[in-house]
Length: 257
Image (cartoon, rainbow, N blue to C red; front, side, top):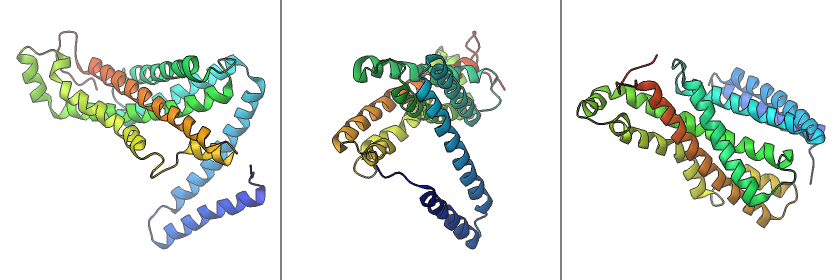
């Protein structure tokens, strides 16, 4: 494996300098944002690299589980802010959706597919969980935002169904289904073109690290299947949680803001 040295990384930073210069030249107003993004990328990734080196060295299950809990919490907070900042009980549902999607997916993969020894081996658990949680966060954000907007923009139709005897689930079924489909679209699109249009980060990283391309492809297949399951679970749970927020026990439609 060819490891970038300090001089090489300085030249890599030059690509961002070119991007900033081009943005300024075109008057896009993005120069400051690109500069901040460059700084945050360097600081955050170097910090993560140092911390993960420590975690991989210690292999302490408590530290690993605490890190995963922190990742779930950050993902849930970001997803909730993208859906709606004003729904009072939404955060717990988003957290639960992302947590359970990651738990079910990683448990399945660890027990039936890769069999890491020990089960908390950070080499596998942390990067695979990070991929799953990141995509579950995106799916939850898209599905949740789509459903919240539908509930607020179609109150008359939903209340008409309720007045005719429909349950809340029945009254909003088409909106919930559309929201879940929207949450899955990025993953399905990626599965449709993977290997043809794009080479995802995992397969590229493994090839650069010297792995057999066929082995890298098999791992990427595993990851795509993991993402499909995790994003579906996250979308199902977050939309269910949103319905719990918008309907009273008496099956009345409200806006909990």
